[in-house]
Image 1 (cartoon, rainbow, N blue to C red):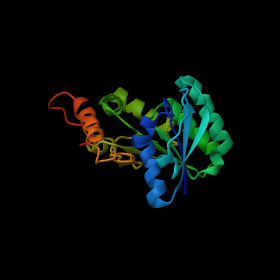
Image 2: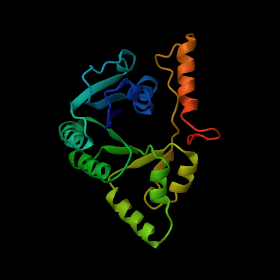
Image 3: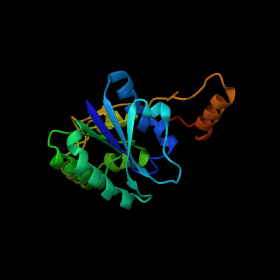
Length: 213
């Protein structure tokens, strides 16, 4: 199987590669023998280079652009030029731009599977989970606009249980929690471990429970 992830934002940063974005592709390539392409944007002067990651995943720069509004046209060009080369095209997040890109994917390659990893926080969840007649109408409209996305995954179990009954996501959403990457982490070096540990626990106020739990 051939999959391409088109990642917006500072996607040429090593930080993005070692997060869920790159590790999803890395795992598919290493353990499932998929052909994986990481389509990124050049946003910094330093050359994007990661030998451990690139051993399994092909990294392709699809243009230089910092702003999201400048990255979207480049993504469209990539899809038009290479959409037929893949079985799956993956996006992060959701919304009108992703819906339009999904439609373009289907126009270029009617057989491609479009996958959206929701990467959803409380704000996004509230947007879809509001109750009331107006919200229900909006959700039905969202279902129509997002019809070209074949399936979604969400990272939080509670969100999944609620959204799987939502008209927007019904019959096309699964629960896929984020994993933890140890790629290029030497567990024998105490400072590396402590640095990652402090970062994780200092991000949240006392008593806060991570959404992925």
